Image (cartoon, rainbow, N blue to C red):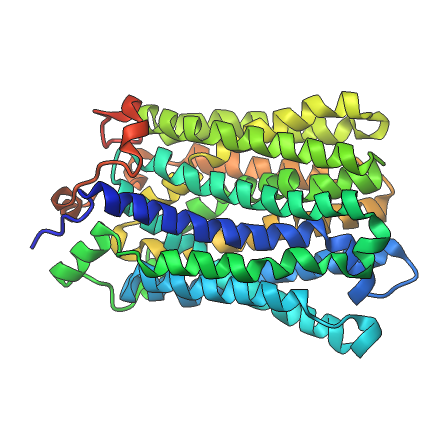
Length: 455
């Protein structure tokens, strides 16, 4: 029985909008916390040392990322067994709901030690839900796109993630700029979290109207659903290891540009809040703009050579960024920051497509959830904490380069080890589904591309 539902343009459009709007809300929720970490630290982690409060706040940020692998272990297999759509709805409800609750949480001054404990628990719920989102939504979009289109289509997930963080940063930093630090510390920081409630309801309504991906429905019709996807994934260790290390650089540079750079410029380089807001906005938008072009390029010419070259350049750019910091001014810091941001955009443009092609459809959500969430927890969510800790321990504001360069080298080694035979995404049942791109009308350049993406 053929499942040919992706030939309806309206269905593809609805799937794309429904998936990406929910993804936007998820990253808005995460971004708001990162940008308001200093205010949250002073209200929930009381200390005479402001750096200690900031480190504690970033530790709570990092802890939520260590819940992501657990969320992935739970929701990844669920998406491979019961479907992408139901899983996407569940994780969105958890994320938006927990973020709204954080906005009404009493502070240390009101309930004492219970405040930071509750904050950590809420962050754990956010991390748990985010861990289930990434494998499910990447599979959903990749399966609607089909072979030869995955780079361009999944690049929009990264664009959405960046825009979500930019939105969070714009709201948080914009309020700080308009209201001032005193008003923000007095409770203004709560407003961006409270906005997650109505935003989440809108996205939930859209996701409820989605249908599952054509490839997953084909598996259902063929009776080819995996009964134990986690066990099957663990028996195929090579793709898991490859994804893990390819995502290492993706994770660290993502949170360098979109989270830590804001704190670094305002707290350590002493740039004013207006300059910091402008630089974060410009660099993030630049990264988002190049992502679809990177995805289209790798659809045509292959993932490995592109990611390898960009990975080397990104590693060198991160080293440059920190080395110019001691004597940096707003006019001298913008160039290395923009280089890092653009290279981040190009590298991240095709990592999701690469993940989806290293794993077969029946195990895709589980495999991505396992292999992606661990490096994001270790090298992504921990990046601000590790960077702040290195600076505090060494007294050297350039010291974070050790961490970021190490993540780049790890990904370069994995890309060198990547082989054409590792790409297993094109399965026989995919030939029975219409695999035209989600946004085919806007991507004429991709017409006629080969489904062999590993050249």
